[in-house]
Length: 562
Image 1: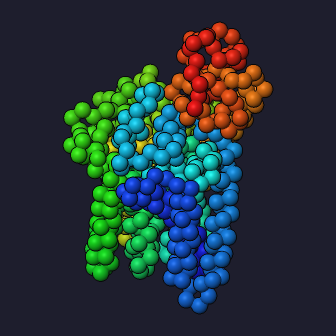
Image 2: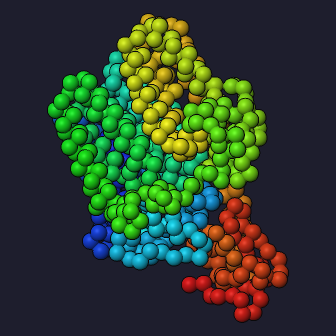
Image 3: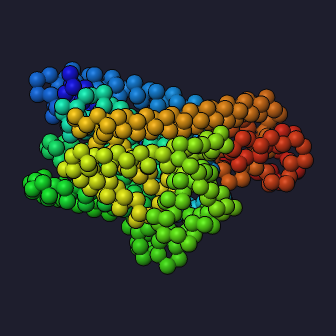
């Protein structure tokens, strides 16, 4: 039964993961061939994902792979349907999502080929990010948007990857400790997948939560490769690596550290054949991911600006964190900054640069919880109880060393690897920039619950797991509640505009992508300047758009929307 559950979980996780990977890789490869995004690209990606599921079923089940494939495909379809409905219900109300992530998708869907076409130029001032940032998430979402015409639903990949990371984590944990209770593996896998960064970005086009899920998939596949081997984990790991390094520049470094750790682990365990295969395939995959699939931006940035990470690196780099860094953190080293942030009162990002305020572990206020309604929590961004989680993790680790030093040492090596991947980022105090830090306390949970015969250690492990679960539930509850309320308010405002005299005048401010929202409700509009409306105005909630309800504005100042 345990093996059956692990196999279903693995095949389901791989199917969901490869849906996202293929939705990015297929259009990216065809860009190089001179082809823009077409309606068929997503459906090709879906067929490739199902093909992966079939291959994985045959790899796992020699006797009757059809049954395993059918069950896993049904699970994948159910998760896809739920993700689709949730993503369509919630609007992306984030600044970045509306300012340039969705705008990039709209240009891609309208035929922009970033490999051959001229760089974009948009009046909102966000062309820099649209032209030069890694864009795997936008490409995958565009493939779905082009296939269906549904912009908001296209953020379903966040939810799909959360589910994929949980499924693969469960399968990896079962492979790592076959004698453990599947319930323990399921609890730890669920808590790993419900990373607060992934949760409070799930219904937006922010990419940090996707990075968190992809890094967890890499960790899970790395464990399966280490324990069992075979061509399937190597291939899946490499394909996931290719997408990860193309989601965000910092993910390139994180994936590199994790891959180096896997290679070291294989070397230390004298699994030299696996080491050779992983090194060769991962190196080839990285080259393909950068030079071919990631030609724009990595190659084009290098050719035009001298390095692949323009504009956030190099002599003229733009520091996107400096204006949001609390003043008291500016003179600290990265470890001091992390301590000051994760043991502080939770706050959202702000240019006011207010100093962080220390908070006692196990305490939080209602005001703190409201910060998790947004996708960009700055100080103490892993949840209101994360400082308590860190303290309990330290206690569990000490108890584990007193009980059995061997497994504790192995767990410490994994923690050290994750810590290195975190501190290489100078903004390690900001949770969304280092989402993999969430895995550290769950390594301690797994260690405590895996060692048999140590009651105090197991009690400490369950206590830590309970605190982590409460922390995640608090974040999930406040995020879902607030986002639902705001989405319903925006939906009501759009219905109000439907009943207004047409066309309405609209100033889209920083978020020209909101044109698609008006079009989806059949609202005719004309562009107006910010000061041209002499009548009643309606500002769409958290959307950067102001609409003039008494016509299109002053004569001669409106331009017809295309």
